[in-house]
Image (cartoon, rainbow, N blue to C red):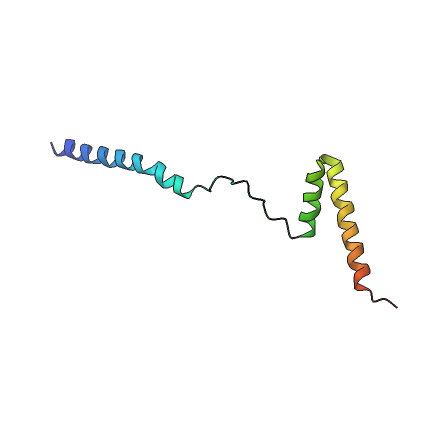
Length: 85
């Protein structure tokens, strides 16, 4: 009889855990997207990638656009660093 009592106790514990587990997992899940604007990327690569995404570019066009954007950013940074004579 002791074996049956242990089985019953174990079964009750398993059912209790099965009932609580979904609630515990749902509490850890990220909240649903509320439609709020996502923060913009802060790195130049992120900005260039975001611009290419907004243009709907894919594949080689996207890669070329990002490369051009980064080159332009580097050129503007270099020219801004030089003092005017």
